[in-house]
Image (tube, rainbow, N blue to C red; front, side, top):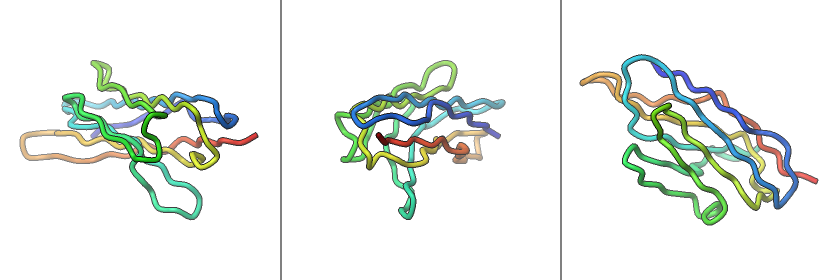
Length: 120
């Protein structure tokens, strides 16, 4: 199994910045990708950004040029740097990890979520 610990959420004014982090821990796993999703009140969960173990990234159109995903380092931690935050970025952000646990086992794991509120 893989446990995920997220941190970095909070309250920020429009135009401000926050950095989220997600650390994966466990035994005998190899990360395939790490990603951030978000879910705003009354909306479906959506992909924000994703990075593969080879460093390939992709972003939602709404966050391109404002958000940057980085990692996956030796500590199995991924970061999401969020700049120029807008009201519409307010959501619970979830870390999502795809990992190979054995030759026959691939699973995805979710963090507990961290709240980002963009408000004056």
